[in-house]
Length: 47
Image (cartoon, rainbow, N blue to C red):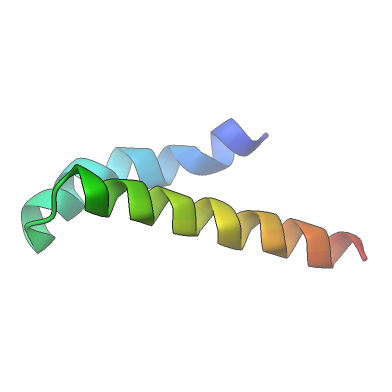
């Protein structure tokens, strides 16, 4: 299920890098932040 939720973020990364002028580090931080927010939402929704 998590791999399906990451699909929009991974698809958008190339255009985000072009528009914002970021490199691979920016892409890694973006994915990490998205995963962290997703897991926090899943954890709090379960409680």
